[in-house]
Length: 120
Image (tube, rainbow, N blue to C red; front, side, top):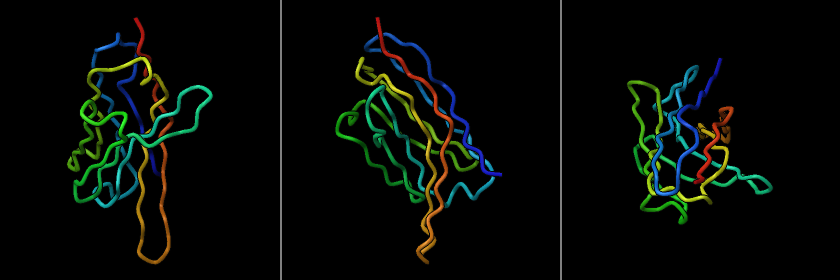
């Protein structure tokens, strides 16, 4: 059974930091690209950051220089370190795992989300 369990969300003041974690199970974690998405109220879900199975990373322009995605394959966990948080970073953050089989199949899993609120 595939599970992605996010943790680490909460309330933080502007300029503060949080680290989100996503613990994965039920699939070959090291083979999957892992991403963090977020969805603010009334807005579409957007991609925040991705780390591939080869440890390449990319980020949304809005978080470059402030957020860092990393993974620990030994712990089957992906992290999102968020620094210099802004009120506009307020959203539910979702962990995503994705794998392309090379035969046209896509395996796509989502966590339940964790709330991040940036407010004074």
